[in-house]
Image 1 (spheres, rainbow, N blue to C red):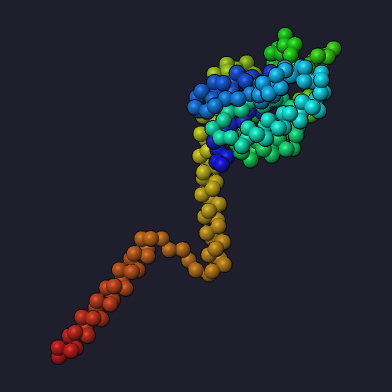
Image 2 (image 1 turned 120 degrees about the horizontal axis):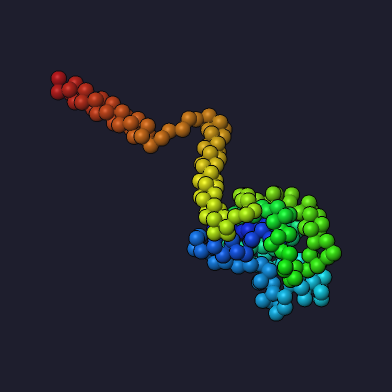
Length: 229
């Protein structure tokens, strides 16, 4: 499967992964899926209930199963949960099967966007800001590790962010293509070093062949002339 057929959005709570993902999928003509919604649909229960019944460990296990399955599909734009990148298995699946976009946002923006959301189990604490700061400190290195593209989302319209991502995806693919061409040339040079021969392009080969044919024709003409004499 072509790695470039999928786009995965990672980032903290409140980064706008679901909203931006829907706009992005529309622009790229991809199918949009939200990992958290997939988990809820399969369980027939919301994330808070899963946390209550199975704890975070149970939720993360289900999350890994969903990401592993969805990463095998193609033509997909997937919004992942904020903590998905903390699993090495998830990170490997995302990096192997798609282009990963890190939607970066500040803790201030997270607080503003999540202050009224009561469906986030990890934020049901006495000090949500402190929780967000602690989570960011733990998770930000993992976001950076998997990211092919990083996009700031603070104080930006979701559609504008989506269009920015589309542009960066085009640039990324061009760079990736150029990099592959360079790798191919390096490989050819290594082969030449091993064989001790020099590369010949098709034009050079054709000219050499023409020279040989001309020499043969001249020799043949000379031989005919001698026989006539």
